Length: 194
Length: 127
Image 1 (cartoon, rainbow over the protein chains, first blue to last red):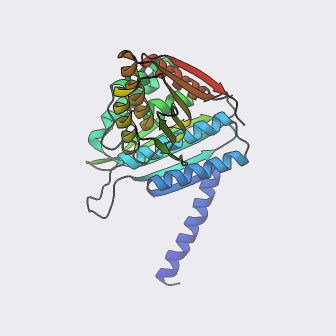
Image 2: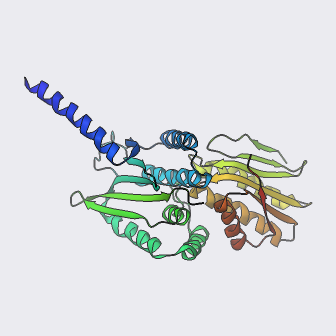
Image 3: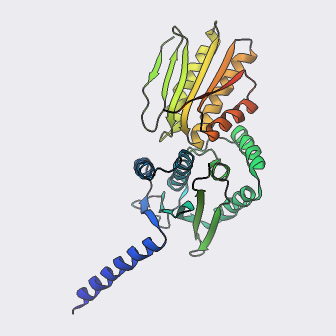
């Protein structure tokens, strides 16, 4: 077998192991790339259709839709790029939707300039420390005091996800190099909760 | 004043601002690609309307979904209505929510807490 044949064989094996991993983690949807408004609309509409077919509760459907929109918009607005060339745009990342018997999980992963890590970590820690009432107060404070950023964010995304799901946010920052980290955020929506 | 009539899509709400027929309503879904450019014309319109409003303004929100970026713009609309109310105009906000949607009900309660304006919560049955 020549070199190219070996590459292809390895690739085909990768496809099979990728397929198996997706099944193991009950991945419903996975994407890597630029997150545009069109992508957000397409993914949420596809997921809505699937949830309707599954006869998922209205409450879970709404929460999944909500969290997907906030997560995808976060990626689209805040993901940084390690490549400074014009051809590589910001706003790229990984999006994964999983579903098991108990819950949906929505995960995003994106490159982030390291200096932003402490700011985001502080918000996430604060949000995870609060109970339902605390989140409500923080939401009201932020919506009053916060200004819409030039990217169109209201600084409410994490607070809102925690408030709507009633679950803690899971996150990690993995160092890529001196300049960049990889930020992973997972939100879970409990099924049949109402 | 000119009438604003925007037909909703799957990511932008229906909007009607019609003084002659006394209809002030935002309904449907709100997650526009650019929230500011969607809502600014409505806020500008309200600004001009607030100066000349003579009768009672009953403003209906009947949203089924809005993202956090939209929530900020909705507050700006409510703050404009609060301003009108504080300057002596008759204003009533009616917040409609699907009867099984606690989150939308709660969103209404939160807005009612933030703005000082007569505020009614109204649930409606889902089809």
